[in-house]
Length: 209
Image (tube, rainbow, N blue to C red; front, side):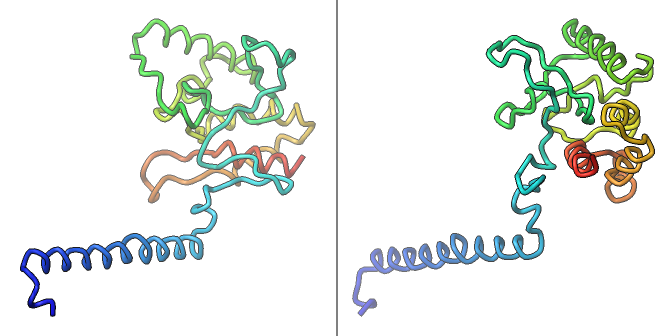
């Protein structure tokens, strides 16, 4: 019967059947297969690498966040944030770790605003951690390209150990051990540098003390 139809109609029907077949394959079967494999083999990553504490989701190990003390005046939008000494602090973020405002500052190395910001951060971090300003690592002073990076260098993590241990009343060796447990190796063994995920580290710290 199809052979009696005009060629144009037969071509359209063939194209429509192909559309249905590809829709089922690429729109239903393939997504379900990929989702099934992801949930079976990489459930944690597929669900956003969520971090839980006391049965509640407290963040994602993929996205940094601030660890600040509560505001003295919650109604004052201009009150400066105060980092909590009981937690390891992340690197600065140009967007305040807002996932909807991902991005860098886009300021050049000679920009006076960036130069001043780095100078101010160096003084603040040195005073907060009780170290010499010249010993403050670069990642404690500069934001990442995404503004959401949850990782810091081993040097910046090591700088904060004594301050965190003192604030929590812990033996520095205990905190140092937690840092070592949450230190990640270079990618493929040679790419980049070793790093510490602040979200995972603070979560482990919360379970310890």
